[in-house]
Amino acid sequence: MNVIFTNHLQQTLNELDETLKDALDEFIFHVKKHGLRGLQDRNKSSADIAPTTQKNLEKIQYAQKHCLWHYHLGVPYYLGKPGNMTSQYVLHYSRYDEFIVLIDIVSHPPFALPSIEKMVHST
Image 1 (cartoon, rainbow, N blue to C red):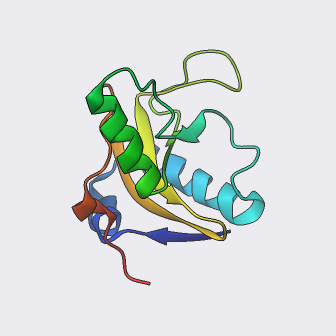
Image 2: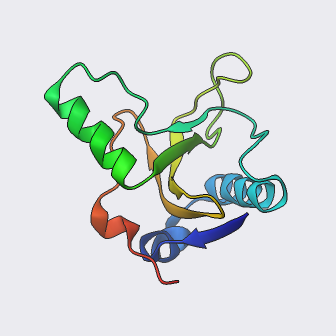
């Protein structure tokens, strides 16, 4: 599977600490070799939230429109049971059939979807 970086992530790579850079490198290596199957832990659609409020409905529609997913990078460490472990830092990306577009690495909570401006990429 091909991996593309947004302009935003390209510009902020130097600001990441070594632990985050290493986690990102591991994610990229895995995806290029195996695709999105068999990742260490929680990798899910960012539209997978309860539609209990109008704000959540808007988030769902936005995430679906932009094919947004997020992966817990295990930084600073994983919490939970294997197969469903979470971490403070997540990698936001857009998922398509043949490629993914890496958008941003953020700390959460709170869980905030990336802005349109952060999704710009050159391909």
